[in-house]
Image (cartoon, rainbow, N blue to C red; front, side, top):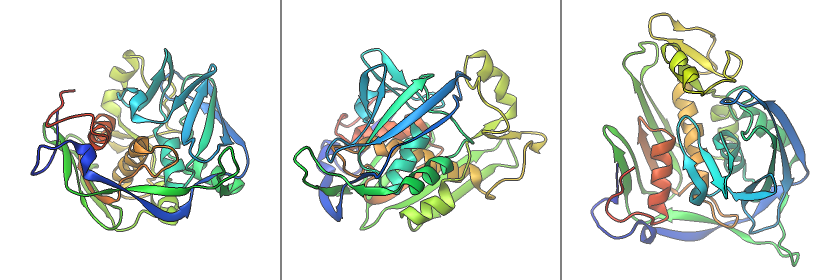
Length: 313
């Protein structure tokens, strides 16, 4: 996989300018918890979310180990995004992080009890968004009782990552725009889909992105099960499509639900760029084609300047 800035060989970190958003960092106004089945292990998992102080950012706690929701701790990207620190891991974090980033929970303590996964719920981030909206947000304060302005990363020049015919490219823009394309020629009912979003604010995400569910190809299910994956997968937490029979558990929530879910995953993975309660998604026009967690996280590493002209995955 190549990873570089377009038109230049300078480090990607010099392509970012951090600016105030004009709003103060937020956290949860109260605590809540949600339990459910873990997608890959099939075990029960409970997630407890707590308010956190300004500047702490979003972080997981499992077995007394604190794991920041940061690209520095991403260790695996096969069918989900996994964070790990000192041998303790948390899997399938992308849907929860997507909701927190999109709704504006900048600082949050996330405790995981039971399985080492965030529960898959219905395969979307809708229940997380609803729970956050129910408890509400409050201004985050630091240890001295002071509030902090939220910062956002503005892209100064184009950056991209590629892998075979997949790519993720971002161009400077005054606002966040996302264009995403997928292509499954072996599955006619999905085929090629493109989605362009001229807005990515809190209400748009809640109404148009959060309820889009993860999807899988029926003919690939047995292989994944043998590999020890999706042990908790079912028609209740994913939309399943057969190459020959089409959708096996309709109806879809959107005609282009698979493409919308890719945007949901992208927001969750880009949230790993957030630092000290800042915004993770860069202010840019982001264009992705045939992406996944591996491509998304490689792009975040480019943003952090962890690669020079190229990086092999």
